Length: 232
Image (cartoon, rainbow, N blue to C red; front, side, top):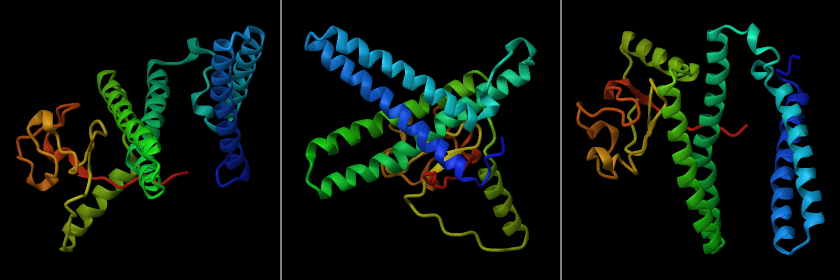
């Protein structure tokens, strides 16, 4: 099924989100009613949640047919690795969007609304999403499932072309984030890398040349400017 540039792709994404939300919502209801001693109602919510999961899986299979495994015995080791790598790539992409864009924006809006409880919640989730992304990146490195991200390569090629043509490089902002080309770890100058002796507020250019990626050990020169992901 070709879903490129189709309304169906957008509808599937929305349906997947709706079914996924229903699953978690019903599991929450199941927990609430269980605590209230309403076992049969809790069971109903739990069973319905499981059905919503199957609905969400069906939608996701249509969205990502490259991840569908019907006959694992027919797959080569390289094909298995490609599927697993794609799973990690999507996981890293989602968690990275959450901690770089989604939750910071939500927290700012909550501060404007003076909703301190929401601020605390969003900031906690931002930190957790960051941790999840790092765990997935480390897993990708440890399992040898790193994948190349084409837009980062395109950026490198563009910069190289500018150098060949004698074009001046664009000035880097001190708040510019940088990403490791080897494992996709993101260096945020606002946070620095305290575990490696890099204080918060240290721009990437000021990091010593002998600094290495805390996830995969890649040299500083393996990092390139990071472009914030855009919500789908």
